[in-house]
Length: 234
Image (cartoon, rainbow, N blue to C red; front, side, top):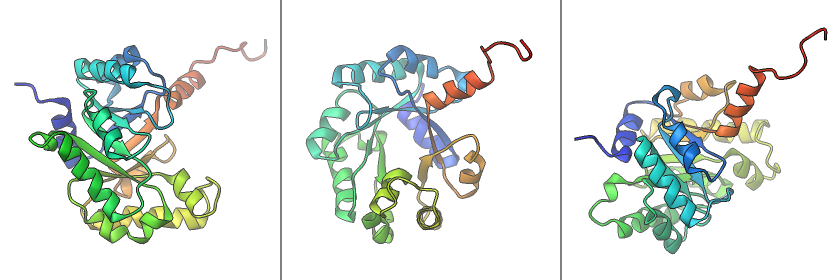
């Protein structure tokens, strides 16, 4: 019997890195396309926090992912219990929760998922974002929270919380991200971050196993390799 997408995803996550793509558009057809085996995508993250998909379209995208054999994750716009429940009941395989600052908030997320699926919560993927100075200051307590599959580093919001206006390339923010990566790896916990072609292998060397990127980045890469302008010398 074929394993459900979430089970396959968790199994691969335990063994090594996984590729997670944000489809960027509320399109079930695009999700279905991303499930082509030759693309190497393990999961789609449907973004309800910064994206435009509504609940009905979320259901359609989750259904398309299921038919394509992809794990479907939904990033909620708020980690409140009613939001987590409403999103999970749309048929997605897991949740991505932003705006968590304290160990208790991370524990509450796990409780909320288990409340929705008391008998099947282990088949759901739980991703919690680490994206604030407050969370970094209590990192050891947060990493000790059981039931979270991935601690997803949000560099832009982390930099904002540190007073750097979204610029995460400076030394202070870079040091904080490096510290989170190292301590998560030492604690035996899996972490994730936004990656680009230029830094992908570096993040893998630092122990990042949840490799997140946008379909728009893929489109940009393809456009640069498929020049449509006039030929040189024309």
